[in-house]
Image (cartoon, rainbow over all chains, first blue to last red; front, side):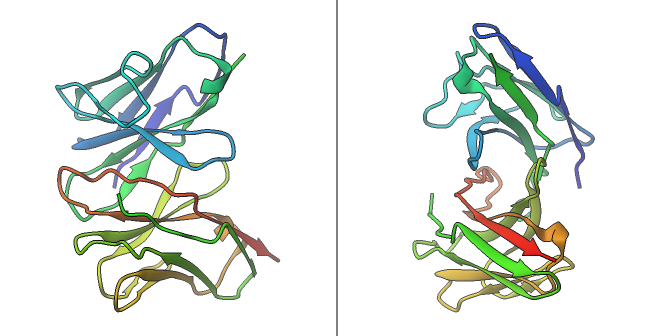
Length: 115
Length: 112
C-alpha cells in the first residue's frame, strides 16, 4: 500500500497569484498523477507526473497553467498559476505502485478557493 | 478511453444488499474493470477490480457479465459508512498506461 500526504489541505488565495501543492508518498512509486475535482463534479485527470522528465498533460491542461515537478520517486508538486475563481477546486494526488494490475491510492486532496 | 455508464444515484436501507450496475459496451479485451468509491470530503479509495471472472474481497463482490459489456458491484450488507459516490472505470492496466479516467459515478444513499 501507499500513504500519501498532501500539503496544504486547504487554502484561500487571491486571484492572479500562484499556489504550489505538495504530494509526498511514503514509498517509491512509479506512477504519480494529479487530478482536479470541481465543486459537485467527478475527478478530471490533469497530468501524469513523470520522474526526471516533463509531465504528460491531458487535453485541456497546459504546462504554463499547471507546472508539475517530480524530482524523485516519492515526491511531486503541482502549481496552479495565475489563479482565477474558476480554479477553485479540490486538487488530488494519486499514485500507483507500478506493478501493473494493482490499485491506485489517493491523497485527501487540497481544497483551493480563489477569491 | 472506453466509456462507462452508471445511474446517477441509488438508495438503500442499512443492512440490505446493494447492486450497483455499470454498462461498458465498448470494453476492449485488455480492459480491467475497476471500482472506486469516494466518501464525503475524502479522496477516492479502491474497492475491487476484475477482468473476466467474478471477484470477491472483504469490501464487496464484482459480478462481470459473460460478454463483459456490463458489471455489477455488490455490497452484501450496506452500512451508513457505505454512503459514497461509486465509480466504475475501465483501464488497460498496462505498466505504462495506468491512468484512471473517472466518469460521473453513482451516488449511493444509505438510510438507517
